[in-house]
Image 1 (cartoon, one colour):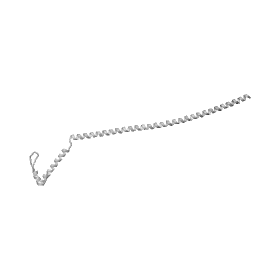
Image 2 (cartoon, rainbow, N blue to C red):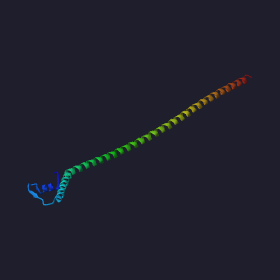
Image 3 (tube, rainbow, N blue to C red):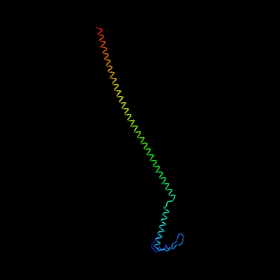
Image 4 (cartoon, rainbow, N blue to C red):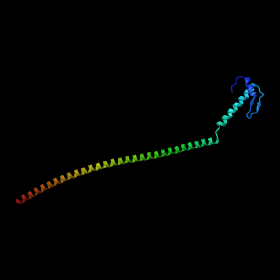
Length: 161
């Protein structure tokens, strides 16, 4: 509705048809009438916004169900994350334990290798000593044979005389 002037507005408002076709006569002055009509219009707009803007029970239930679903998904994701973290921690612990065992095995193998090398050295030295003893025994045997020969020769010489 376009308001051209106060007087035209007053005339238009004085005789209006109501909702049911009843003519309503206003006995207010133009300024008051305008204030009242603006108030009524604003109340109608507020009421329409309130009625249209208010959520229904179905809307509230849908929002609550969505919120509960989102909350459940978040809880499930948190539980999954905790389970994954626990699994990762367990795997890390197993890996550390395996690494420690492997390290210990390497150290034990190195120690066994050193012991084996020392045993080889000892065995080589024993062989060397045995070979030297054999040589000494052979030399002693030669010396003993020579002495025996000399003694026999000396005995023969003494017997010949």
